[in-house]
Image 1 (tube, rainbow, N blue to C red):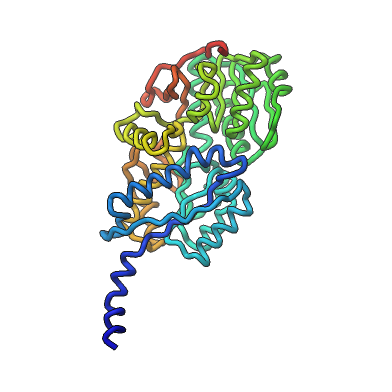
Image 2: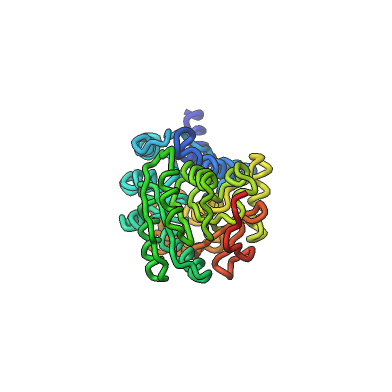
Length: 384
């Protein structure tokens, strides 16, 4: 009897000291892995290691170690959904972290609402996602209209009159293309060619040759990482060198710069930050390089880290009760490496649209002016 009483008395202490189990599915293989393994999973791992080294996650004053429960979603939406269903229903993890990409986040939206798990997504962007009005979904990445409005403002200021655009035929590309058309129309920039292409495309040279013949002032590829690399290589091959060359996901990756070298001088793309942005950003950058011997990307990596900072601050305040946690995220203001963050109807309303550009090995912020880390290079120099 004494043993039973002793065990009962100790049980709450053991329960308090149990790890906080945080589940996620992420692409380790397949076409999504190029982005996921640069932008998200390394940040998940580094964050958990840093928090555990400091004694654990602060859960309303009690520190508990983090246990990550992650698996490969194989770049497959059905696997994403099945994995999150299992994590939330039978595994009953304490928290979840998001998968990579707009499509995967869209796929898992019904499940997070069904089970009531807050999710802060650093690689999902689109009004269609926010239009679902899922109270548990928070998009910390800038939305398509913010990013495309920034690009339109930048090009308008440089007297760009005509543009050509291609986009991946997937939710991300469709949303970005719609936002770009609206922004360019408002700024009086004529889109003289618009083409879509399938995910996994292997050759864009015929499309690029057609666009080259039309001689636009600006070229915009609303692309995923493999397409960003492809369109850059093939534009160089055919000497297609408009005054402004902009590609989307992957342009901010250090491996993009490393693969092409001086070739990418003047290429623009989606961005937010670089190590010059703030002391906190530099500290994050240095820690990432020290741990992984590779640099984080200059767009969504910082949003991934900021999302983890938001979650950490919200858990410290609200604990692991998911409804209380959701309220804390929805109504709080958070200090992050990309600045103070507030959400309105699930959207990060604090981080503006940004245009960045490769210059001498760094992805410099060139727009808006109050965030710029360097003056813009326009027109783009010839391919090297």
